[in-house]
Amino acid sequence: MNTDSKGSKIPTFLKEMIEEQYGKPIAEKILEGYQTKRNTTFRVNTLKSEVAEIEDILKENDIEYEKVEWSNTAFILKNVSEKEIRNLEIYQEGKIYLQSLSSMLPPIILQPKEGADILDMAAAPGGKTTQIAAMTNNKANITACEINKIRAERLQYNLEKQEAKVYVMTQDARKIDDFFSFDQILLDSPCSGSGTIQLHWQDDKRNHKLEETFTEKLVQKSVETQTTLLKKAIHLLKQGKEMVYSTCSILANENEDIVQNMLKQGNAEIVPIECKGIDQLPLLPTKIKGTLCVCPNQLYEGFFIAKIKKL
Image 1 (cartoon, helix red, strand yellow):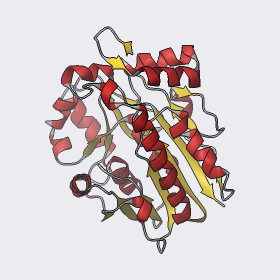
Image 2: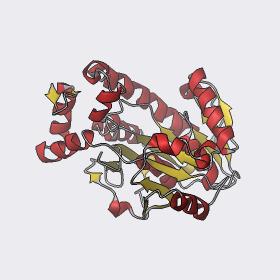
Image 3: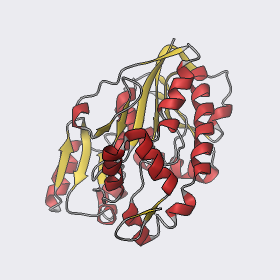
Image 4: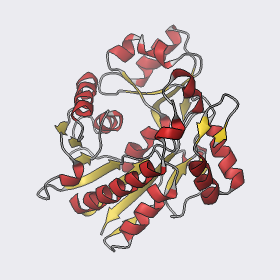
């Protein structure tokens, strides 16, 4: 078991997997990212506000912030906590949405279009779903799927708070009727969460007993779910159209391996990711050219993204 100075523990098997996949120098960088407390970040909900209004309010409250090159609506906060932001009216009124920078990337890479039929296959709690709604000015036909009833209720709450027009389907995305077909699909798949580990969470019990909850069984179960979901996504995607597959994992068996196995079927191809400011991201090496994997650090969670076109 790998232990940091505070006593938090990384499962030995995970440390070994990371070292085998990336080599020791990069693995050390990832493990360092696990020990770093991330800045609070949010996205402006352009369905209810404008970037200029939010900037004015932040300045009025002496809140220091930074922007990112790849998104005009993303903010990195410098001197306030998430709890303090939740107390602001702009949060309570749904004018902003607390969201990690990494999780904002899949919708941006998907490039959702107004008038398109769009499916978000594992939507709760709704960060990416509401982002897609905002990016399309509520002019796309968005279906959000969530199997868990409680999580679906949370999704519905966030949709209403953000004033996002979305149809919620409370069912297993793997069992969506084949009658449906979509122009664009976002599959932000359930995963082990190997990219989101933060060892300082041990102090507030969110990361309690990581060595017991993050198991090899969890990874294997994730792989099985991801494989089935991606196969279904390709089936539901219209020919010639594009989708995004993403996870908050940095493990190849949940990422490149899943995509590679799907590509072997011969009915899809990788669309190289082109994104403004992509060179500013802390990227890890990937086994598939044109995909990207973000390294966890002070600003970003570990995240994998692949863009796929159905042939």
